[in-house]
Image 1 (cartoon, rainbow, N blue to C red):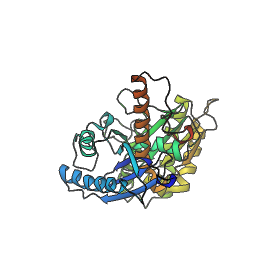
Image 2 (image 1 turned 90 degrees about the horizontal axis):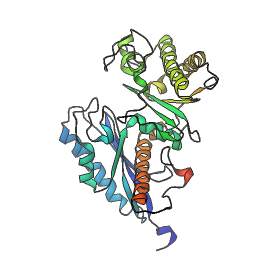
Image 3 (image 1 turned 30 degrees about the vertical axis):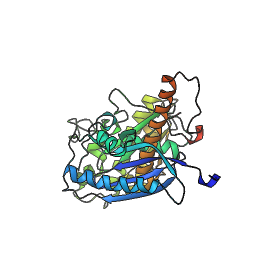
Image 4 (image 1 turned 90 degrees about the vertical axis):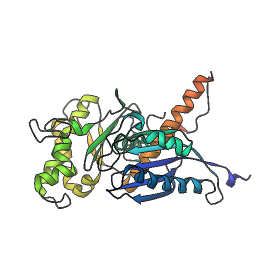
Length: 327
């Protein structure tokens, strides 16, 4: 076998979104070796949805067997899924899909015969931002993803904050307008109820893609307020914001968000905190799944090393390659 024939390590990345499924092979350095996607009809039943996913995965794994004469060694599966989900995606109920407590992880283990690691899509995006996005090189930051819902993730000392049930970083449920609009969680005035795309459409009576200047300012202000609470609480200086609404509202939104952050983050350690747009663009969801997969593979490798009594083991990833919480 020549040097050019050496196997290439990868994880199978799976993105579960309300309107489409995506799969990719992702290298340890965050390269998308190959990718594919399928539109998901909203009326499809649970097993029809899974059949669509099976077709995508089987085609991708078949290509992995001999991609351009280079063998791709698939180490595991990383899944980024829209919520609500249970820890490790044991059961998932993504809004907009017919899956209700669907046992996604066990079905994927059965299908692929590989270890499967999963997390919320917004939390995976936090990993991806630190790995190959706007937070690269920052050990402490949070990310906020604004679409039909608002999710997030918090990275502290290069570790994604999990929390008791694996839902750490749910910034969409920070109260930004006391007594405000009713949120799907039951509270009033949550960021998601005031600043998501669905909230904007309910408030304005028009598509979020046709905002007024005032609604772009207001939405940015509320996001900046939530960001300031997070920076003040967790000693952060960087907030990465992405998602459909952030892209559509662009500069007006980000300017208003930064002004609000400056106004409310006044502590010595949070003063000067900044909001920056995501740099992942359309590759973000698959990089999120890839980051989740490599984090899981890395943790499993360390666990195996401990169980075997090994004092050291060469990492499958070099330090600069590793997504946050894989170090």
